[in-house]
Image 1 (cartoon, rainbow, N blue to C red):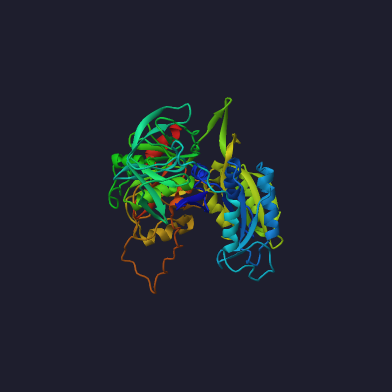
Image 2: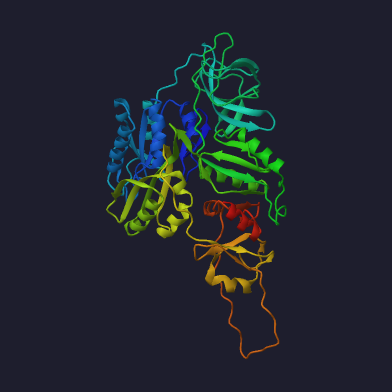
Length: 549
């Protein structure tokens, strides 16, 4: 759960919320560094993504520097955070040198750091000099011989429409110049082929500049090799010295992307055909190495697999901003067969909630097959719960969690591994309201439907048969008429009629829509709108499909 950026000879790994799960990106980035700084909140302590990134760093033999940030907060508890970090390192198998980590106290917002703790509410240091000096002292300089044979391992990919695929990596040994012939090797025992590097670029701040020569320790971008991939080593033709291939984590979640076939298709987007959607997904594969795309037996439907719900919704959001129209199905986890037994991805989940909401949250997670691993109170009215829960149990939980905690809860999760299938998990409890006609939403009709449930639409919105217009109060789906108008008569009454009052609709976001739908429903995504619909728009088609199921 990190955003990785390269700046000069430094790699910034920025902790981010949500579940994009760029685990492979983090591991490949860590393979290019000589040291790491582990940033921990002085109040929250180590989070699930902290555990994930730290495990990768310790496994590579890196010695972390622990920075306890936000020590100026009223609820800061730096001593607890340091002890929790030590326990975390111990559980992750750190050696004695890694357990003897240096500690720096800091307030990033106020721009100071210190090596010794101070009094609460006071400033402990003058500036960031202590942190800088600690990094210089404890991070070793890169050891590489510029006269040795070239050894450059590709750790990430980029893409340009002008030069094609671009490989990013750090030079371990040797010297690299533009217009150089190299041997591209897929590990010591893999296949190899000859290639020619056209350009060599370095980083200056956030800019990329062409370089005439690059040496050991430099992070460079190279182009000219069309089929360059993650983990390959660019080495000398005469004296090849390949490195072991880097592992790319497999996808854990899959969704079906299809052409938008609703009656409103083509009104808002520029790219609406299956060929255009397929070409865009193929372009994404050039740089998004954790993504998998394959065609299905159904025409115009593509199976897209990624490293989590956020990973896929980011792709969808980018596509709709670029002018694409498409429809997507419900996310599904990727199962594995281990010794003839079905295994599923498991997540480490941490929730930080008020004690009054603890019962409801624990009941909801229990229904989703979650197992409580740890519970800890901070003594100030809040409690932290650590769970191990199937990835499919978290689909749709975000909205329920916000409702259970009245918006005061904090939640984060990270992929942990595969375990045996834990059984069926109950699906959505409420049914939906499905439109029976095409037309425009009428205020009068919404007033009649207001007591049936919450709406997704407003008066004046376009609607079509089979489109989902709201959530039903009960557990069954019903067909409604949201375009019904009031019948006019010559019967008159004295006084004014009562004004029609309707409940404000639920605002559909991409994340909420993807979590909300069931197997027989789709999310229609356009540059301007997000709509929910049934897979089969006609009522008789839905009945036939349910009988077949």
